[in-house]
Length: 135
Image 1: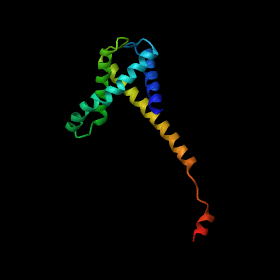
Image 2: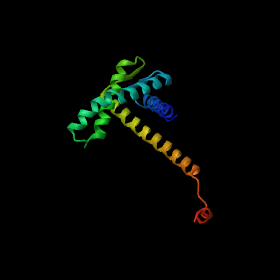
Image 3: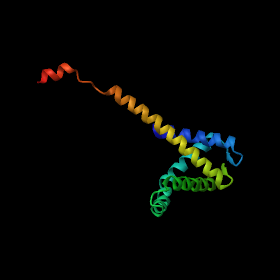
Image 4: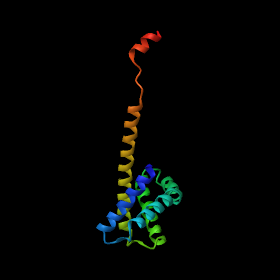
């Protein structure tokens, strides 16, 4: 369920950025869902293979910057693969990468908070009388 929520939020961010930025064009929301899915899949596979040697070179000191640049490269790759999605330039791709990272972090934080609330509600309290009866 978290994957679907994250996918829909990412698609919403793409549509919002296409509305705000003249360098980004997305034909429809379903195109944005498809683009968000491709960015996620390529970032998890190809992006990992690109990030690994780059992080080794920077000794993991610049891993966040490397992640943003690789995500921007993935966005430009998806731009070439999907006909109804266009990003003119590398800086708009960086802005999209930053916006997707922020949105993903917020969704992860919200779902983590909900999971923690559910765990606290499900926790069974042992009454203190039961402890005395056991002794």
